[in-house]
Amino acid sequence: MSIDRFGRNIDYLRISLTDKCNLRCVYCMPEDITFRPRAELLQDEEIDRLVHVFAELGFHKFRLTGGEPTVRANVVDIVGRIARTPGVKTVAMTTNGLMLNKLAQPLAEAGLQRVNVSIDTLDPEKFKKVTRWGQVEDVWAGIDAAETAGLGVKLNAVVVRNYNDKEDVVDLARLTLYQPWQVRFIEMMPFGDVADFQQAGIVSQEALMATITAALGPLTDVHDGCLDGEAQIYQLEDALGMIGFISSVTQPFCASCTRARLTADGRLRLCLLREKEVDLMTPLRNGASNDQLKAIIEEGIWWKPWGHKLGEEVIPLNRVMSEIGG
Ligand code: SAM
Ligand code: SF4
Image (cartoon, rainbow, N blue to C red):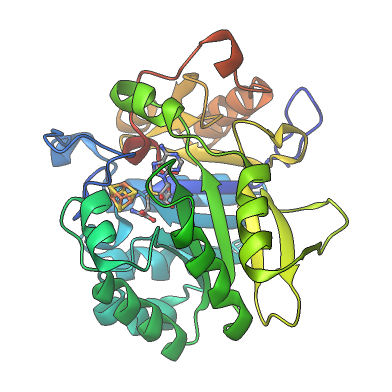
C-alpha cells in the first residue's frame, strides 16, 4: 500500500501516454504548442517497468490519458501489457474518441474496460470551434464503436461560460434520459498560459444544475452527497443514465483523492493543481533498481499535497493540461 501523510491510500495511477494530440481544445493547449521530442517521453518498456513497480506498491487502477492516448504508437500493445500485469484490476482510458472507430475493438480485446469520451457539445459548429478543427460525427462514431466493443462509456464535457453552459449542457444532460451513460460536467481548471481564459470561464455547479433543472426537471442526488470517484452524481426522473459534476476548483475532493499521475516525460505528479512533481525518468534511465524506484515513489506519495491554492492566486504554471494528463 502507498499511504500519504494524511492517511490516504493512493492506488490509482493516471498515465499520460503522450503530450501530443490530434485536436487543440482551446481550454487545454495553445494552437501553436510545441510537443516534446519522442526521446524525452517514456518509452514502451519504461512504461511497462513503472507499471510493474506501481502495481507492486498496491496500485490496481490505471487510466491512460494524454494528450490523446490513442495517437501513441503501439497503444493497443501497451494496454495489453498493463492489463496483464499482476495486481492490475482496472484499465480505463480518457480519450477524445476520434480514433475509437478503428481502435475500440482491439483495445477491448487487449483488456481495456472503460472509456471516458470527451464531448463538450452536440453542435457540430461549436465543436469545431472549441477543438479548433474536430468533427463531432467522428466522436459519435467512436462512441458507437466503443459500445459495440463492450467498453463501458462515460461522457466528459468541460463547461465554458458563454460557450456551452446553456443549451449545450441541456442537450448533453438530455442524453441520459435515453442512454445508460454517465454524462459528467467538468469545471474548467487553470493551467499555464491559458489560465486567465480558464478562470474567466468557470461556471458553478449550482448554475449548471439550475439550467438543467429548468429545462429537464428535478435532479435527484443518487449517492446522498457521496462522491463516485471525483463526481457528485445526480439523475433526472425516469432517466436511464446519470449526470455527474466534477467541480475540482470550487468543491475540491482532496479527502477522497486516491490518485497520482505519471506525466508523459516520466514525472510523478502528485496533484493535478499543484506543481510538485517527482522525477522518475532520471533514476529509471540511470539504472535504478525496482526497490530504489519504489522508495522514490513512496517518498513522493508521502508528501502528496492537500488542496489547491487557486484562492491565493497560486496557479500551476509549469505545464498545460495535456502534458499532465487530466
Ligand atoms: N485527449 C483526451 C481527452 O480529451 O479526453 C485525454 C486528455 S484530456 C487533457 C483529459 C480531460 O481533461 C478531458 O476530458 C478534457 O476535456 C479535460 N480538460 C482539458 N483541459 C482542461 C481544463 N483546463 N480544465 C478542466 N478539464 C480539462
Ligand atoms: Fe487534445 Fe484532450 Fe486536450 Fe482536447 S482536451 S486538446 S482532445 S488532449
